[in-house]
Amino acid sequence: MEKKITWLESLGEGLKQAREGKKAVFLDFFNPG
Amino acid sequence: MDAVTYPDEKVTRFLQEKFIPVRLAHDHPELSRKFNVTWTPALFILDEEGTIHHSSVGFLSPEELIPFGLLGLAKVAFDQGRYDQALGYLDDILEHHPESAAVPETIYLRAVCLFKKTNDASALKKAYEELSSRFPENEWTKRAYPYQLLQP
Image 1 (cartoon, each protein chain N blue to C red):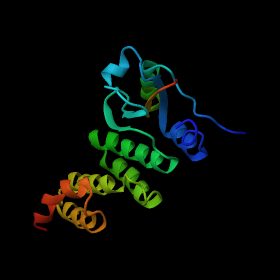
Image 2: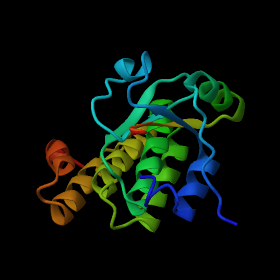
Image 3: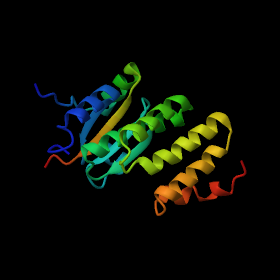
Image 4: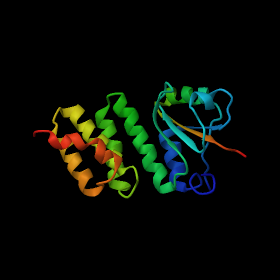
């Protein structure tokens, strides 16, 4: 089964999870249009 | 990125295992200005406090995205003084992504890590020699130029 990246849509939530998981954040600004 | 890079199985696994992936629209009312986003894709590697350690603008292929991420992780570790961890990420790039555009900067940063760890300047001189031999016109070769003058 194809796996997809689970993107968060909130930087604040991403930083919270990064602190909890001792990980870095990969932040992508994209053009949805 | 959505058509080629992000669906790639290795990229998906790499981003999911090594990072918290966050995606925002380029016109996010608050954060696009804070990060000075004027073109997409705009990619940033942040530590857990939100400090930027590495960034890129424009398309990255699957073959380039993984070394870009590894270099970002190395920079986070380097900036936080965790030189052994940084060296692990940098060696990963050199071993598994030897054709990547990230290699010249990796060679440079690896030498700086070794110097910070050991205070032995020979690593810097060796890095210049390798860079000037393999990548004579690269910007990282030019940045390493003074290291050829160091005494062993």
